[in-house]
Length: 217
Image (cartoon, one colour):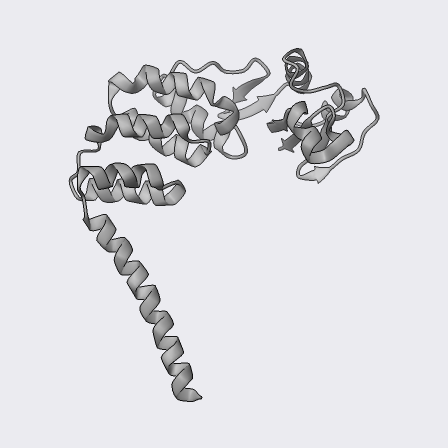
């Protein structure tokens, strides 16, 4: 039994080693068609590590400008949007393209802890990205006017008067029509929301007016 167990463990270790070796070999194949495929395949930290690997191996990433732009157009994740935007901004001719993408994807990246990171990049690079009217920055921290936020989202038919409320990640009940009064007591630094048409599928009747997540300081 001990011998069989040893053989089994050895087989697993060899399998893991072969997988790792395969990954390394793939990285070592720095042919243009493979690089394009890898850029399109990787995401998140894998994408960041791969692009760093290319730079470490003196690959001119600018040669893959169109691939990176196409990748940015397709991605939905803040991490990928940020990494790709940073790299593409190294070439000034990409500035208007980045501005267009950031404006169109604002609901994808202005969320959670990513919002301030993106707005700092926008200000540093002097990008023409429209800042919503319902928040401003004080000492580098985003401060929301919730009444203005809700008014804007109702006008855009994204939220109703009484959206489902998660306050600091906790489901919070309130009387209909009293949401503004409750949240006036808080210093809000981030609001994320799910619009009406999506929240109904997730929460049923409770989500008929949408869902908001409010983070306070």
